[in-house]
Image 1 (spheres, helix red, strand yellow):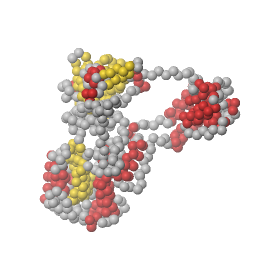
Image 2 (spheres, one colour):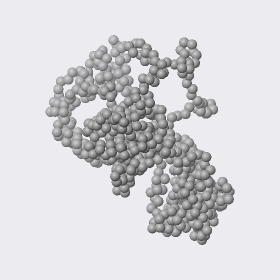
Image 3 (cartoon, helix red, strand yellow):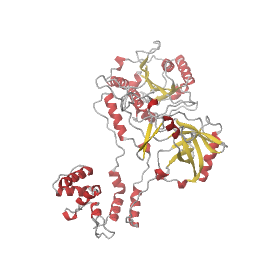
Image 4 (tube, helix red, strand yellow):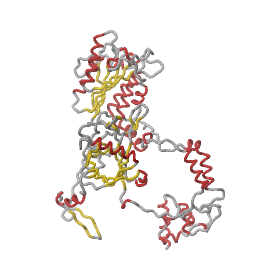
Length: 623
């Protein structure tokens, strides 16, 4: 799960201004999705597409019609919402139509095409039909066009939809699509009504965003003519940025889950003695999995419910929770526990962070990775004044380049963990927009029982020439890696198949697997360097297991079997029977197993385990 980063600004005296507190949540299990509560409400978003349907939107010379682009934006957003945040509410309202359909019925030329509701497949199909009507020039017969509309009535319709929504909304937005920069040029009354209603919408928490399209006349869209006052822009701002980037963003298919920022825990951070501060713990990275399948009745297609019952093995009677005990085996004996005893063994201490000491940051080993890190952020709701103390601790850790070693108990009945708090300073871009917030990354550290020791046999070392050639290959294949640039191909294929089935599409949209390397580009960038490296490691006359000079050395049966057989002579084959008797057939290579099976007239196909099974069957019958 990915969480947002909030907004922070640098202030004098107190270091960082930490802004408002992120959302909080109470959880029982660490891997469960948490619902937010408290000061930050990350609930449903409400979005209304308000689309101009006057004749000017249907006129285009050598480019796509403005009305087509608007409908495609709405369709793409609905598709994205189904995957990203299906609980959000989206509506499509048309104005400038001859026909009208709205809650009051008094607003002429305002047509609610889709009411405020959750996106689904039928609503996508309705937009497809609307888009097809535009392409077939039947829109005028179905809904008609009219320039005698009131934009104020369209705003009233959007406001009423939000006001009558029975669900609590975290945000309310209206996207206005039009290519007419002065819709009420001849009516001062309609202009005043529209500006007044737009101001009322802002005061009630409704955001109005204008996505202006190129006018049909070919002239430039002049926001100062009318929409400057509607949008509440400053007097010195008479131009809007090019909407192409915003439209491209709306038209981009993003098949990914939208995760709200929320806290795993809000716990105290004990520095020693009676000194404490409040912190929030956030998850920055979590694997996104496919949504679970829902079981249906094979005859009725109705969802089935799962019930779990515990039965006594001897009597077959149903057991109540109070009748169940737990056990683990130790030395062949069953150690039986009551539920209360199990709960008491899980409890170590009160939830929170306990500072143990500090270590140089260089002592932190990357290979001691246990699981994805969390992010620590101050929380005034736990202990007042926590932000100042947190800022002081962060500033000193950054100055001394040290990490704080802490014991971490996330909640009651949770086992303790060792974590290292790695400080992170605030980072901004050239436009003074925050890229990374200030705080601590909580790196989970292993216990002694978690470490594994490997006994690796000594082998020949690479020469300086070979190392230099390898460095050159690495240098030429370096690239800037950003995980946000790589989508999970398995998830993308899953969502595309779901989309095709739900929308009854004949063909499934192809997905690009960005995990496949570009061999042609690699060859262009490092082809010669890779050839030089291979020549340095495997010179002319080199054979497997040879010394640096390339001369062959004697090997025993085990080492010979572990290397690929380059000759078809039977004398080069290892003694497979000895490997069978010693139970070490898995040490043989696939070519050696296939060569042996071929020598005894047994057809050998499949994976290595299949070949081992064939060899095992051969000797079991022979011996």
